[in-house]
Image 1 (cartoon, rainbow, N blue to C red):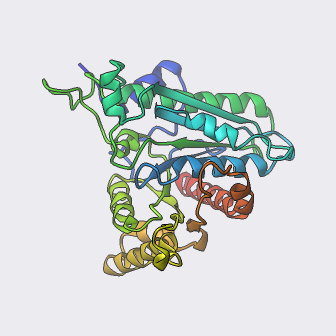
Image 2 (image 1 turned 90 degrees about the horizontal axis):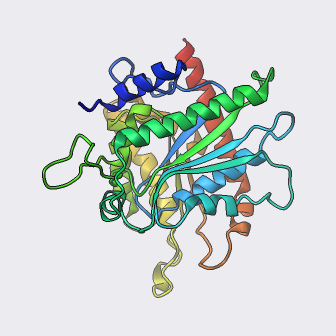
Length: 338
């Protein structure tokens, strides 16, 4: 008989004897933070594919790698649980190549499961006859996070009070995009292998979220609906980032319209209105409390121009995001202790 994700996590923890505070029992606590105090972990979701998740992941890794390099060298981790075609891990490493010779923290990247075909995980796992179940994904990701914690405790020695580790986990596709399919998933039928959405797959881990909105024309609806899907599943969203969409070269009449900036402002207005309607829902107010929690970055240069200059010009924005995420992590950890 198959066991649920939370049951599997408890079983893994009991076998290893580890105290895995990043495993959450959804039925026992409304808090979305159950992680090690010196190990900040954020899960990166996007409103859709091609909204810039890997670009933002790389920027956050750059900021964490270049921040606080004095003393103990805190490693920065990037994890891609599901990869279909290409390599987001390689993209992150390419855009974090020592940054003009500056001293940086160690960057460690991992891809947990990969397929060759650039398509949805639920399809490629069938096409390539390489099923991966929800339990396998969650179990392996949990084990990797536990290994990172153990490495930190070994490396930092007696410097635990000041040392910290940052881990960025990047999901695949959009919030409700499919994960990999497997005959061992609970939703399997006689006709097809079952699968879960990305949001449902990672929900048992209760990891706080950095969300990449859609900065293009038409992006407001998919951004709001994706955020609502995360909130209803109990996720805490610490920051929302938009990348300004490229202007349409064939439509000069609208070149001056900044859809990404407008989408960010629409999000603020939406949350303000929703908070007025139901002040008891703190999820809306939490993002409105800090001006740096909703950010719109300028458009990316056209391909094949490298992103080096774009990252350099937005270094301050990514550093402020890094500091904000650190602050929210520490604040949530203090609340959890209470």
